[in-house]
Each structure stands twice: as structure tokens, then as C-alpha cells.
Amino acid sequence: MTIYELETDNNRALLSYRFLIACGLALFLFVRAMISYNAFDLVDRQDRLMLLTAPMSLSGFTPFAVLFPLIPYATSFSDEFNSGYTKYIITRIGVKQYTKKKILSVGLSGALTIGIPFLIIFVMIAFLGVPTTAANMSDFYCGTKWEPYVAIWGGNFVMSAKLVLGLLFGCVWALVGLAISTVVTNRYVVIIGPFILYQALWRLLANTNINPLYMLRGDFGTPGQFTGSYVYILLYQAIWIILACVAIVFGIRRRLKNV
Image (cartoon, rainbow, N blue to C red; front, side, top):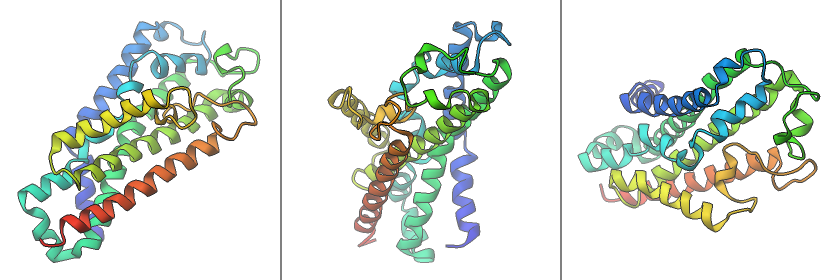
């Protein structure tokens, strides 16, 4: 796989109208929640992490968050397979390199679809709010794993940590969509399948520390508790990524065996 081929695939993923739509819609939901919360009228009057609860908790984003990473490029394998493009490309770079390229481009597009709106809204909050301190900390963070860290960098440390969670979450679910596309090469199933899985796991694993929905914001767990700690969430999502990549490798290999 050449650098040019990887850049071309990344360009298709990141310089597309679908990527812009997904990022724009997510950002719209966050800004709308901040307007509803009157956050823009609280400049220098509300601490950063309290302002953060508006886009994170009141926007209605979390239940549908899994859809956004799927929109830009998760359907690319099914689209290319159905069009016959895969037969052309694997004769040039081989199945192994094609699979690596697809995992990298889809994972990156999913990560940035969540990460870019998160970054924009976090930067806005950093400018709008006053630094969070132990004195003005919201009760929302009391007793949570975030409590020991809320005053670091005036709340910016927690937002930075949540940005990493958002990037990983987007990567996970984009790759889950890609894995599904190697089984059912229908773009609508690739979009709806992960959403159904996400909703089912949310219901089945409610109030447990293995509920994938909780991994987006990480607002669970208590200080000293490993299952629910930040490291736990990082490891949890890393395991999802590894399992999805394994499924993708086997799925693409099976699909292209006789192509």
C-alpha cells in the first residue's frame, strides 16, 4: 500500500459531503442544546464543566451517537464490492493491503466525525465559561471518577479526556459498521445494523459497567473503582477495536477469496 493510495482513500472518507453532513449535524445538536440552556448568556458566569452538561447531556446526541461515525465511510466496502471496484483494486495492491487501507480510512473517519464536533464545542466552552475549581464544581461530578480531576486546567483536562473517549467511540462504531458490511453488503444494513446493536446492548446492559453507551461520555464509576475508571474505558474500547478489526480481516478475506 503506497502513501498515495492511503491518502486517496482518506480523502474520499474525509473530504466528502457525507463527512461534512455528519459533523455538521452533530455540532448543530450540541449548539442547539447550548442555546436552549442559555449557555451563551452565561459568559464568564458559569464554570466550564457545568456548561459542558448542556451539549453532553441535554442535546439528545448520545442515544443516536453511533449513527454519526457510520455515515461518512463505513459503507465504502459494500459500495466498492457491489460496484466491482474491489476486484480492480486488489489486483493492484492485494487483499491484505486493501484491508489495512480500509480499516485505517474507516476508523479515522469515524473517530473524526465525533472528535471534530467535540473539539469545536469544547473550545467554545473553554472560552465561554470560567475555570472550574473545587469551590464552584457542580454536584454532577461529586462522587464520580472525574471529581479528583475537575479543577485541573480549570476543567480543560476533563474535556480533553472526554475528547479522547469521543475519538475512540467514533472509531469503534465505524469499524463495527465495516465489519457488518463484510457479512451483508447492503449499505442500509451497514447503517441500521450497528444502531440496532447499540440500542439492544443499551437495554440489555443497562446500569452495568459494560454498557457501550456509557463509553462516549464516561460519566460513570467512582474514584478508586477500576470498572468505570478512565483506564477501563480506554481498554474496553481498545478491545472493541481489536475485535472489529479481526472480524473485518476475516470478513474481507472471505468475501474476496474468489474475486
